[in-house]
Image 1 (cartoon, helix red, strand yellow):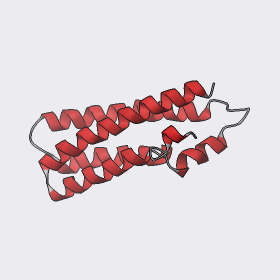
Image 2 (image 1 turned 90 degrees about the vertical axis):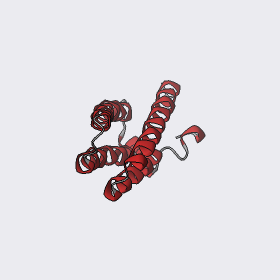
Image 3 (image 1 turned 180 degrees about the vertical axis):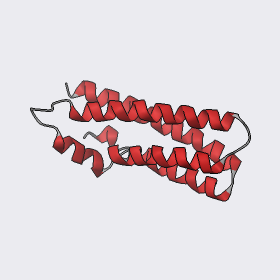
Amino acid sequence: MGKCMQGYLDEQFMELEELQDDVNPNFVEEVATLYFKDSARLINSIDQALERGSFDFNRLDNYMHQFKGSSTSIGASKVKTECTMFREYCRMGNAEGCLRTFQQVKKEHATLRKKLEHYFQASQ
């Protein structure tokens, strides 16, 4: 894992890399593709829930719990940190905090996607 990934991915990503071998040469890229597909669905669900204006904090927390879990499984540390903050705001019933933090979640998610796309292109 290169310097450009430091801070964005933790040791969980390195463990995924260790599972990659000649039998599964694209294992990590496939896991990342599934992560981005699943997280895009969750981001869309959260966006829709926030657009309604009436905040169902339990529902938002459940979506973000799933998002945080999949981010943890791929080692997306910055995304995971923002997910944790969002969930804290849900627990406090802080709509403004949720909105602000969700923008940060989306920003970190997009940055990670770009960095991983570059990483996979460079490793081919």
